[in-house]
Length: 212
Image (tube, rainbow, N blue to C red):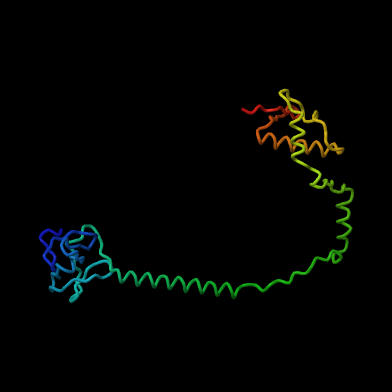
């Protein structure tokens, strides 16, 4: 498309850099070849960019570029202006929505403490619901459970032959809690790969795991 045209400044060869732009290989001047080399076929006026097309500066007739191959020219200043206007409109809409929401916001509700006596029979109904329920089972203080002590105890009784969890002697007078704590120790040891654990029926079996 640029064959036969040279730079109007220095006469150097031209190369296309993008749609609607070329550059001189000698002086590196970059310009629009349509505006530089073409004229209006109707009146001979110079072309100018109007949004996405060329038009004559005199008669405003559309000028078809000989230097664009299936492309469009863009008026950069026009699109910068339109983008700025679009951002301004969006900001105005956000501000209007913010003001509308602020005006429609409900005032803070006054929340009063619940008064059980305000509803006749409510207290008695609640008493009936809780009547007969055993108090929650108290768990001993955490300080009484020594995980390392129970892990050492379980390891001391584990060998190459599997035994059930119940066969490991308790360390605490509370049999129920002691069984739970032995089970916790077994889980931690199994996770560390020191023992093997599995279930057969209702029994939990443990065995010492050989470490390579």
